[in-house]
Structures are given as C-alpha cells and as structure tokens.
Length: 225
Image (cartoon, rainbow, N blue to C red; front, side, top):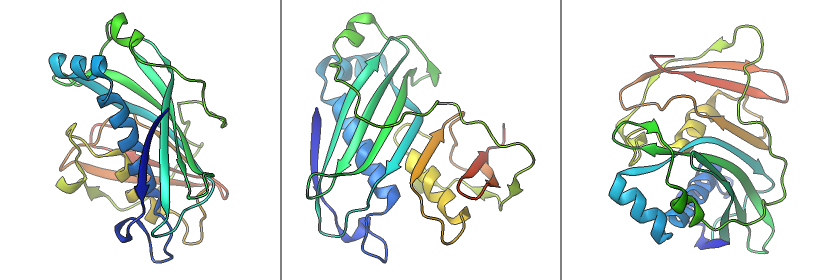
C-alpha cells in the first residue's frame, strides 16, 4: 500500500470548513501519480518511451468530508493490470483512520506523442505490485445516458488554467464545472466519470443535464462529439 500524509489547509475547504470534493479528488489523483512515479521500472518506461497513463474511468464514493486543519492519509494500490490498462483503488482516511472518500480508477497506457492507447511490455506490467481490491461497490465503466433529451446548459470555453501536464483538462475540473449544474440542495454521495475524449484548451463545451431526482447525469459535449 502506497501512502501520502497531508493536512487540510484553508485553500482546500469550502465556506462550511469541509474538504471540497474536487480537492479530495486532487489529493487522491496525486497519490496515485506518485505511486506510478515511484516505481523505478514504470517511471523509466514512461520517461524513455514518452508514454503515460490516461484515466478513462473514476468512481468516487463519499462517506464523509473532513474539516480544515484535519490530518488525513491517502492510500492507493493497484489490484489489476494487463498490457493495455490497469485498475486501482485509492482512499482518503480522516484523522481517526476512517474512510472518508474511496475511489475506483481505470487507467490506460498511452503513447503521449500520438495520444493513442498502446500495449506496454509484459516486463513492465510484471513490475507493478498487486494488492487485493479495497472493499467497495464497483460499477460498470461505461455510463449510459438516460433516454430523452437532456436540458441544455450554457456553453463554456476550457480555460488554460484547467489544463494539466498531459495537455488536456484535468479530471477534477470535470467535477468542478459540473457541480454548479446540480440542484442547489443536492448532496453528492457518489460520482462516476466516464472519459470518452479529452477536452482541450480553448475548446467549446456544452453540458446536457439529465435530472432523475436521486441521480443527475451530466454529459459534457465537446466540439467533435
């Protein structure tokens, strides 16, 4: 198990003093990335072949939201991997060691020059330690849109500040732009992100909202969708 210990600062909480969901996702994403980078075989392969891993699915379960100044621990482990993609769990523990957030992620090996999925050498896959999956309900990767037409939201342009080191919109920003589209009193308990295409700087994006009461689905449609 790979661990990262943190302390929640004022820039990571909302007006209620609780950890923002987007910041929690950032913490979990960083821990997962550090886990990849600290594997000498994997990091050397990424560096020499100019490859990486793109997130293609994330499911987040929100149990509680720790408060400002609270000391937290983020833990991550890979539980399945083949030459095309790998799966991991990451969880955020509060100051008492209880699970506050837990997620399930699927990443694909990618040639960064072509932004195309590839198959990694078997010796690279064999160098990735595996651990049993964490206890959580894992839902299917593909999200099916509800029937009917969704409510069309206001289009926006992807700003430069949303772009990550892979050159596309960082995955927590998909949550950030979606949250204001939810009903004001909507309490988020689960988030599923199904990445079909990467949104790029300057791209015009139109959201379509499907409100089904307990579940709200938002499709962010780029210019080529």
